[in-house]
Length: 246
Image 1 (cartoon, one colour):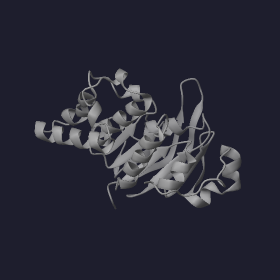
Image 2 (cartoon, rainbow, N blue to C red):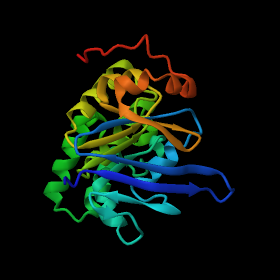
Image 3 (cartoon, rainbow, N blue to C red):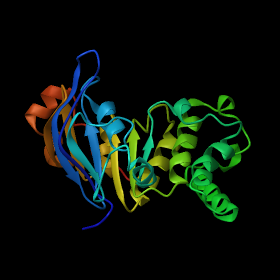
Image 4 (cartoon, helix red, strand yellow):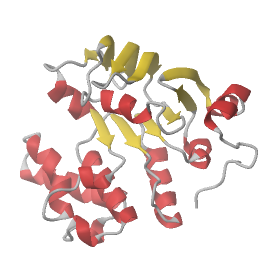
């Protein structure tokens, strides 16, 4: 079995205030899957994503990353495998310059300086951020910060890329560039999003959360045309058709 897989096995999570965010979640993403995670606000999407690299740990059930169960002991290995891009870019950009932000992860992996520099250059190029490398995060637009935050994850060479609302605040050009990036990522992706058009363009699979429960999981075209999914999420799919990303 490929090591680029992610498995949730009967995962439950309740916040300290008693709110049950995840209820018996089970699914497996395989190498090469590009899966969308959709649902209304409050359905549990962000909570689920925070479990993928151990920022939250399940209170019952198990999560496997390429055969490694997520636990406090395995977090360093898991976080080298799963790259998580937060919904708010400011949560990932904290160094004096964007270049230093992107270098932070590889440096903490104890890579040689030449390899760190190579990874930084490539990650910035991949997201179209090379010209901002010497700027501070506060000097960038919301969309530019989004691209820079993605670069901080790509520089670590993850096998699994997890993204929370990646197209939010992006203009049309940046959105097209991001779509190309996701399409070119050869391993495994899990993307929480409200951007149904992007789902149709790049995702072969859709998982649907509703009030902390996984109510649908299957190929994109089938799931997005399921009456229960349309009703629970409020999406409108008839106007969306795959488009060519130029």
